[in-house]
Image 1 (cartoon, rainbow, N blue to C red):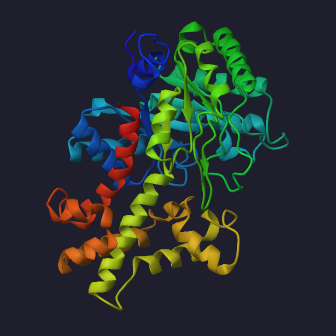
Image 2 (cartoon, rainbow, N blue to C red):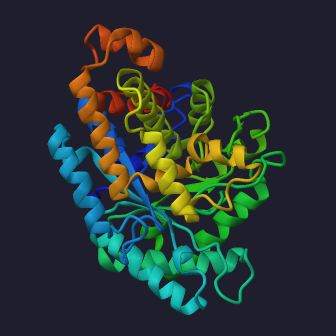
Image 3 (cartoon, rainbow, N blue to C red):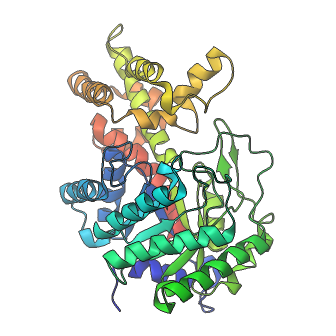
Length: 427
């Protein structure tokens, strides 16, 4: 059977090919962002390399009711396709995925109603051509415990898969499990972070396999490609828990008992390059990154803002515009940052959690960014200022390898992160 998810199925099976040593394993980067400049960076890089690019939207971000971006799955797909056409990326290279698809956006409702909406969302994702679906029904709804039993989670995940199969039979690849924070990131300290216990991973797998094969058949179960587990990586507001393969050894050793599956690692943002490569070698073949990409985007925009301030002292500042937007609309960061007023002030802009990413789509923010680009095209960007504010890209800009254009510089800053992931995933 031919399926659009074939590259994902191949990725899962290569982890169990005894002819491929761990040092030669390949992975795939999952780009989890709806920011057009981040997507342009990912798609233009795919056009350059000719390799598949996996782009994912979350349940809160994109759903049949619009999500916080205002986009349905069809609208998100069309945005990705429009950008791809503009940068010359073949549509055949693009794999679309849905992350944490389940009742989370409606968990304040009774379970029956929340699951009906979740099933409608999965159906909408499938109908729009999304081929990688992470089914996450782990959260309790109104009147339920916050964490549910494996049996209930598997039963609900099975119902979500049934909705996708009804919409586009045989086309989706599924991911199960949820050893990660809810969409939006972690707010707690990372002191007690531990990899998933092997027994827990195997139990999750066994229960889901029993449910799926009984209710949906062996063919659907064969398209379950990955289990989300906690390898021991995470980031907080100002710190990062690095991957330690020795701490994850017992979990890694369970992978041979999971034929046809790989591990999916969430929250890999800000990991060093060596850790990303070790994750792939150890079977964490799908590396999800999101805030780390918009963090790089914000760094570039603020650096360009610094160049403009040096050239036009006393003029508009992007930093001030964003600060005003965030203080006027605190819903996306309040509760995530704690400390003195001064600490919260800098965290709003510079935190690893990157809650500022929720504000770039506001009309005032989009206008401020375009004004920044326009101003710098008028003033130019002298080499000494590029060296001061963009030292990582300075040499490539002044030698002409990166166009001396503020918008393109911002995209290239995002590509530097994607290059780290490509290096880890495609060796």
